[in-house]
Image (cartoon, rainbow, N blue to C red; front, top):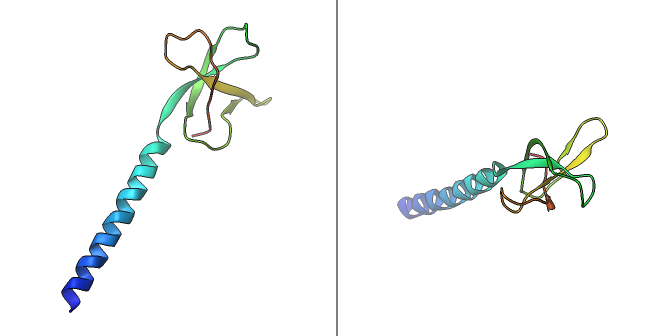
Length: 84
């Protein structure tokens, strides 16, 4: 009687821990952030941000918002990035 309950408890705790690990790995999905002041301006490299939705990634006292590129060769930076 105790063995089946213990097996179920281990299975449930394993499911929760693997779900937590999956969420943690997403938190470390870092992307290069770029400053982008207007559609015609160049994307200047700034600091690393995350692509996991949260508070917007900003830099400096003025909290300039940082953006990502769709791919490294892209000339525009219009992908929203978030704080790590």
